[in-house]
Length: 177
Image (cartoon, rainbow, N blue to C red):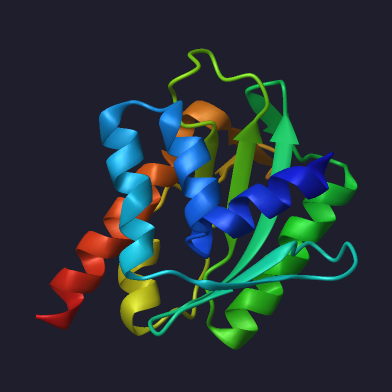
């Protein structure tokens, strides 16, 4: 089932017109308008093979984003003591080594209101980013950690995907000035 959501996110980020039309029909005007901004500066999106903590890789002129897609009917995902925790730690190490910003895309299967954006975007606190990625990283909500140091992803604490798209578009314009 998560393959369906990976394809949905891939279609959104790569500005697939048919998918964007279908998705924006069911959204409020602000969310729909923000989604459509991706058409001005889409990503090239590649589905990653295997389960190594990265499902998609989104590439544009200003950044490359390794993306891990998570889906659930629950609003809170706890990583502690699971394979997800190991994947997150490996993702941070790899991203710090390469200087790229990791993204967690959390798709709520049953959002509270049908017109709400079902996607919520997070990143992880990390070092080693430069340029636009560092600038953008500061604007994205981070995965929360518990007192024991385990990651927690709470859907409502993330930035909606439509807002992520808008913020990226806005920050690129600001960065280029």
